[in-house]
Length: 315
Image (cartoon, rainbow, N blue to C red; front, side, top):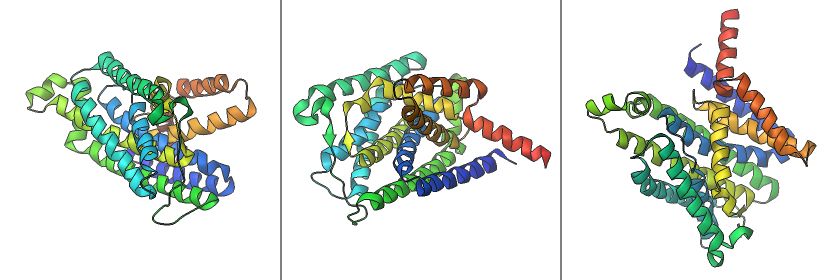
């Protein structure tokens, strides 16, 4: 079985599992929606990891998408338009920041992204008249496709929207990674000088991937705001950026399935750890995820590929 078929089969099983969880455990609709929103942001980080670059500040774009939804909600009552606005704002911000950080590599790239994110976090905390500081902004529930939904209907509709956007984003990113521009990302990591000699600008290749990753994170941030109906500056804090990188490592960078698989496992482990051990859930979460990472050097998606290969040989 080829890697593409394994990824497609694994993605289909993940979709079925999420729908089943949402159907039989209604409270998991919310958790699954958040996991898919996180997966979108992590998908962008996975693209940068293909180029050998780690962004410790991508929470900036999650916050940009979320706060755009919060700021525009009093003026616009359609969720799809709010989500689109959040994506566009994050994309534009990603272009501005990317023009600067795409010049740098390795630790300088990571720390500069962190610096921009922390500046945004500080502004979101200090500009109380605009952002309500650490109290955050409540987001009134909008309509979706013109339908004023409430309660369970809203949760199902938002979950379906998040699932649809995740599938579409995964397919588009997979196509991008197979295209020449996506293939060039690997050369940025291993043979950047040869890439330049071939007449291809490594800075332009990285900038393109960076802007796409910002757009994905902004979409994830917008979905988070619509799911929680509340945004706070913690969305831009460095711990959130670190969490996204952690999920990327947990899921693995071998395919577009990795970010979503990692995000789902991360959210489920966090929720159950918090419920079972309310005073020590961070420690339980850390231990469980550490064991998973040590047991799967290539992430969860690597385990999926290895399992499929064994089944293929057995057949």
